[in-house]
Length: 171
Ligand SMILES: CC(C)(COP(=O)(O)OP(=O)(O)OC[C@H]1O[C@@H](n2cnc3c(N)ncnc32)[C@H](O)[C@@H]1OP(=O)(O)O)[C@@H](O)C(=O)NCCC(=O)NCCS
Image (cartoon, rainbow, N blue to C red; front, top):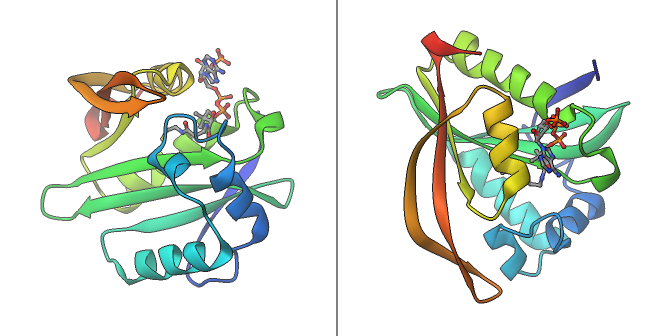
């Protein structure tokens, strides 16, 4: 099993050229709105600074062999409704399909269900993003809903698929 570490981002020290390069990589962000923007160190500093102000958000840096290789964001953390959304970005394509993303989700589930005592962890995916769809299904999420024609990438329309996993029904 691959060993990864998650480090809660509490300041701007991990914002780097490498992180910005992941965001500007069209292939990695093929089905993300991030692909429509040009990212810079300054835009990323501003993004993280704004996120740090939010109580409803936590960003973690993913470390593999002591190297920062990606990020995972928990957003819309609702202590009232006990729900939270997750987004994962592994920036190094040569590390894909080695079980790293699944290990990240395993740790995230622990944080969400055991530490934060949430009831529901959810994510949404563009219907063309087959690897993410398989990724969530493989990790015990269920498809809850699908909204038609929510996105257009390269002139093609895609649906928005919502995946969830519940505290009392973990795989
Ligand atoms: C989606 C992502 C997190 C997966 O990370 P990963 O480390 O490659 O995932 P894992 O190795 O744990 O793969 C788990 C399962 O996901 C599915 N999967 C992953 N990559 C896949 C691919 N290229 N094609 C089809 N299925 C894929 C498979 O079911 C895989 O299990 P298997 O290898 O036993 O068949 C990673 O590709 C990524 O960061 N992509 C860019 C950003 C993104 O799309 N994020 C998801 C939206 S939040």
